[in-house]
Figure 1 (cartoon, each protein chain N blue to C red):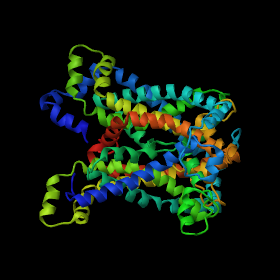
Figure 2 (figure 1 turned 180 degrees about the horizontal axis):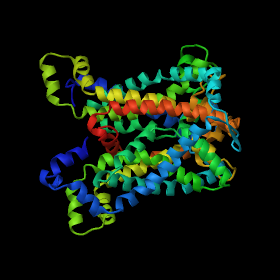
Figure 3 (figure 1 turned 30 degrees about the vertical axis):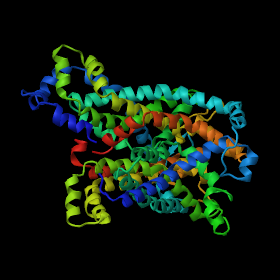
Figure 4 (figure 1 turned 135 degrees about the vertical axis):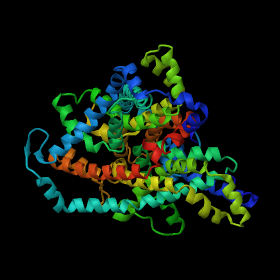
Length: 276
Length: 312
């Protein structure tokens, strides 16, 4: 840990950390500051600080129908997709770690195989199917597809974590006559809660931030999700950068908020599950 | 770091963890059909929405297909693909984007090494460094486009030096570096986490020994820290190679739309335009198959590199 004892060395490291920290955070501050500035002020000096809180940019965005509606659409998709994806992955991870039956190893390898696959690889036939079924106006395909593509990594992460839950706890519950579903609810869910929550948060961020599938699946005018709508801002407000930045801020705020609130859990879950 | 490992090592009495008599058979009988029922939703979704469509994509790569009717044409699409100059340029672009891999690994290493010293506020820095990684590529991409305008952040140093601002998105190399900049900015936090998790397991006696031998700070970094995290450095390199093939779509779509010319077009973006803008579903499927093979090969390499106990 502390490999440098000298005061001078630690000061240098602190200064370097500040520089790196500034480069990580400054773009976000730039976005936040300018969201509250007028277009004129921005054009005079993009790097200025807000002198007064100027809410017109937000007003302009929130009264534009597609922006507010797109947030609603994303929420409609994200809640069931996240809940289903996380629940199904937790059940799968439970079976993979705490029961033994033929074929579970093979199924797990199948999941590993597609864990890093991008949406492009699967979307072409799925899109054609959705069109054939006449579901281009429905949120259902997006919900199922988002749930499915997050399952392999979620299962992988929770499996790594559930392996640390002592088998003895499961055995003890079984001796008491608990059905496996009860074991899942009363042993695995409480003991694995940090991992389950980490997965739920990661899935939420993935879907909230995803662009490709949301462009392809929900492109009818009254069904667009948030990220495709954000891509339209630069065309619409290309000359009015503060409005664009206000839109980006609103789009990023939920993810920033969730990350900062759950940072401790997040950091630990990521560090223990990603590679070991 | 290894919460679960400590649990199994310390929290479980050996005898309880491994029941003595034929556990496999007893379990199967007692657990009945529950494992199948519990696995079913995940497996059905993954097979139905990922595995089966990959099969369909492979089949349709052998057809001429407009999304309505398809006609079997054998390997015609792949022959066309082999001669496709645009495809060569796209693969060339992917090779160029690999430059970002050492950039990400080095930035991750610098961040991890600095945080590892645990100077004042290191926990805050650790959280801040990861912050860009939780943003949507759309947010990052749009933000970057405001930085590469003539009076934007990327031209500020040039203007201080009295030089002319660069038109970043107007020529191939600056446009590529704009995209790579966005990728490095959003990726180094994750890399830092991976490396830090390995560093926290380094035995501190190694540093003490190096100190007694008179090794300076850089020498300790080179001879103790880096060798101890070599597995994670390998993992990071491979996973970021995968990401240069799978994670650039959002940046390309938002920042450059593949241009200028096709100098920033990636395979996924080319697949997207071929299929969904030009309506050539068969050729798009062939492109998707190429991407599938690349990602699958890299996935195998990555799991071969993982410490062995991980994928048991």
